[in-house]
Image (cartoon, rainbow, N blue to C red; front, side):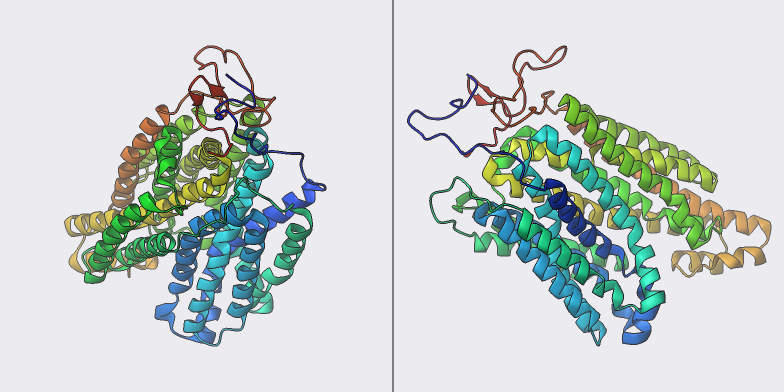
Length: 549
């Protein structure tokens, strides 16, 4: 049975349609959403080029890395919390609160008088930034049906890629021209503009709930502690190794908190992440693919600049140019994927192509990194960028479509959190692989003094000119072999993502709204199931209806 009555018990009132007409001046609202997303992503990397000026003013160089870590920690913790609160209390109020917190953190960062203060204020800024990111995508889920949503989510992904790329550049320009404090102050006029746009243009949302929402405070606290342990453990392991007592203690704490959180979510009236969402195979696969692609792609590419700088002698500015094709290809692939899905409704083969293409590029990189030139590396990175882009937001889009309407925010934040944790874990795990292979290769191929500088990370590329050709070539071989191993280790991770993607249902997203008049009926054609995501069947919805449970 299809139509409004599908999957609804007799006598129950019809559910509120999940998608109504677009609000007035939707393009202006979309601009506000894009602006908040760009701000939250830019601030992940905007301090990278401001480091010398910032530490010269505040001191405490040994604490500088925490300006990144504190932001990413609270950013990751905030995502599931804001996703759930938006589902419970309405998107607009929660979204506006995230903007206010982000602006308060930005203003406070600009006034910091010590590195400790800056780290604390960056943590506050991250609490808002995580809310901005998840709320923007959740608003699209509230307002648009999946196929129309695909078109706009591609734009968001492109903006995110450009924002990540532009962060260090913007930070450097502002620091040189106005001082490092302006890398934070610049958010205030932009944020106020976005705040006004969201307040005036985003309609208030009322969910189908008839009872007062109950916040899962215990679940939020346990999940926040779990995420904090995971992020801190990966950060410390990346800098000091996995065997440190602090890393082991954080890992043990993560296991205890994970067990406690799972027990809590099974009994909570309003769990912060409903475990039943993972009962849907498509949702679980989307989460797994998002994690594996981020783990492999961002984990690997972090170490390419080290190779280019130490072996090929490539300048920092040229390294940025060599990465530009990868970022642009990733953005273009995301936009194209969104446009195609919007027209056809078919989505399965994008994650499949994403993981397969990225795995092929990683395998090629493992064979050519040791002796390939900078141009060849840039080309392979561009291919990996296309692979990552093909699934970058498809996973979010499809995960949203599997969830009931009241869990749009949770489904969005869960996939986003998986992507963030994949990036963090990938950088740490592949960093360990790189260091281990550097140590083994340096001991095998280099004199003791040169091997020590390579292993300790103090190798100066200028020293290559003072070495005999044989030793200089051996240094290049050491770094090349280590980088090759990193990319080789990424291949099975991506193949696991490919295997998961192949298990996705070959359904399609509906044209106008879950279970509504725009949902296509009849056979899909060769290989299709004859039904679409959101279309009811004899036993209820095929994947997800967007209606209240």
